[in-house]
Each structure stands twice: as structure tokens, then as C-alpha cells.
Amino acid sequence: MLASLLMLIALLCAGVLIPVPYAEMSPGPTYNTLGEHNGECVLQISGRKNCETAGGHLNMTTVRVTGSEYRMNLVEAVYGWLAHDDVVVPHSTLYPDDKTPDQVDQQNAEEFTQSQESAKVAALRALKKPVTAHVIVGAVQKGAPAQGKLHAGDVIKSVDGTAVREPDDVAKLVTKHKPGQKVAFSVVPAKDVAAAEKRGKQPTGEERVTITTAKADQGRSRAIVGIQAGVDYTFPFRIDIKLADVGGPSAGLMFALGIVDRLSSGDLTGGKYIAGTGTIDDKGTVGPIGGIEMKTIGARDAGARYFLTPKENCAAAAKDVPGGLRLVKVHTIDDALKALEKIRKGDTAGLPKCTTG
Image 1 (tube, one colour):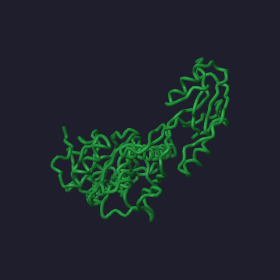
Image 2 (cartoon, helix red, strand yellow):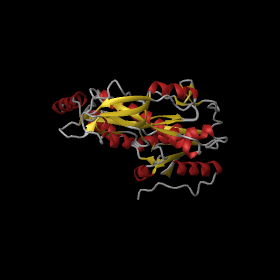
Image 3 (cartoon, rainbow, N blue to C red):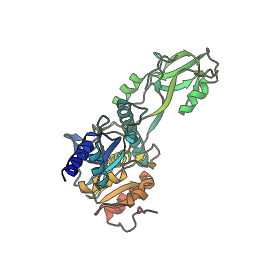
Image 4 (cartoon, rainbow, N blue to C red):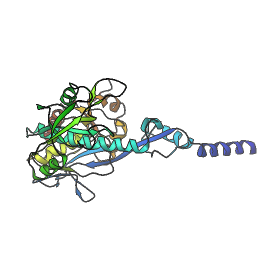
């Protein structure tokens, strides 16, 4: 008996002391996009109504994960596997081996920022409000010919006198040159764009920038200037999203719906407690996210009764629906708005359902 007891103690000590290559995911907090966080409105729109909600909720959901430097021990991993509300996954799932923790955090921050911009565009387009698109300098490669001449955020109006309307137009026009030849950009500097946005105006004041092209890497003869083109938008009024310590793109749908509510005369929720998740693109298409099981649990625990679920996540979410929560399948922002109308009117029989099939 003494030998068995000593062996058990040794095994328990080993389980506590030996790290294992796993991380844990659990339900995180939810945030009402119609309400306040840390004393200020989550959504702030110039000249529009404040964030008094009359009891309605459009909550975005999150997943809490263990930190990149934290290493679970065997006992914690076994407990996590047995717990219903937690999920244990390989550490590399959350923190890939080819990226540093800082790079992972930076990527999450960039995705969160991009989700906000896409949400603004999708919401305004759903309301038929004007949105002006601009081709911009998204990034400048270090040591490239464009470094110091073009800057992230510069609006590209034309290349060699030819107007650009899509990011791909820039590369096509640059590669018409041979390495060593000059290419002329007409741009509105990023600082002028920012100043115009503060005034609610369209950016003006073009500048001509001439850059000598270089040869692409790997010995190819293609000409480059070393920039990555992207798209930015000018809105008819200023929209700010105030929510810190959240990353990733999965709040896009709920941000978009919150903006629609703020810009509408009525109340999208009808006073109901609704949560959801999903990425969103500029056209209003809702995309899948990770950790759907954790997010539905977090939504139910916060008080939600309806959960807007991306179509691609429906099968996984429907396998274990938290009690008292109803999953509503959506694929576009229009789907979500139609579902909210049914919920608001109490006509819930026809809501699109999530199934395991």
C-alpha cells in the first residue's frame, strides 16, 4: 500500500510538473455593440444618436485562450478534455511554430481593424448610403524603390496617366515597364487623406511621384516598385469603434448590424437579447469563424436567446446547442437583417435553422 501511495504521489507530481504541448480555449466575454464599454459607446457615429438601447442587445462574442508563453501541465490538459465548456487544442493551432507571439498578436490586431472597416462598408451599402472606394498604398517593402517616396495610406489616382480603379491595376501598369525604367504615380498623400476625413470631405491635392523600377526577386525580369496596393473607403460621416483587447476578424457581422441600428430610425432588436459572430466582407458576405462552440456557450451565459450563426459554422454549432439558445443561420448581412425583423415581430417560426446535416 505504501508503494502504491508513493507511486500515485509520483504520478500526480509528474502530471503537475511536466508541460504538454496544448492550449485551452474557453468561452470569453461578450460585448453589446449597441451599448458602452469602459464608459464610452462601442460605436460612435458623428451626428447620430447615442448608445441608449432601450434594452436591446446585439452582442459580439469572443473566445478566451491561454497565453502564448503558458504551458499546460498534464493534469490541466486532462481536466480540459473532460470539461464540457472548454476545448484543449494543440498549442500550434493557436500559436503557429513559424510565427512569434508578437506576430500572432499583430495579425489578430490587423484582422480586427480590417473587420471594422469591412463592417462599415457593408452596413452603409445595406442602407444604400454612399461609400467611395480608393486604391491605396497598403504597404511599402523595406529597401524597395518606393521607400521614402510612397507611404502606406497614400491614395493612388493614376499610374503613367492611366486611372486605377482596382488594386490589380497598379501591378499591371508597373509591369509594363522593364527594370530600371521610370514609372509615374499620381497620389494624394496619406496625411491629406486623414485631414479630409476629419472634415468629412473627399481627399484632394494630387502629387506626382516618379520611381525607378527594380527587378523582382528570384532573378525574374518583371519590374516592381515594392508596394502592395489595397482598397480604402471614404464615408459620409465619421464612424469609430471603441473596443480594446479584442483581436481577429469574427466581430465583423455584429459591428455591421450595430452600425445599421445606429443609422436607422427604429430598433433592430425589438428589445430582444441577440448575439452572434461571423466575418464580413465589403459586399456583406458573412464568413466562418473559429471556436463556435465556445461562443455559443458564452452568448447563452450572458443572457442571449438568439445566436446569428455563419452558414459554414452551423453544422458544428448544431451538434451541441446550449440550452435556451436558438441558432439562426445567416450567409449575408441581408439574411441577418431579415432574421432580426422576424425576431423583432415575434415571427420566429420561419427563422433559418442550423442543422447537423
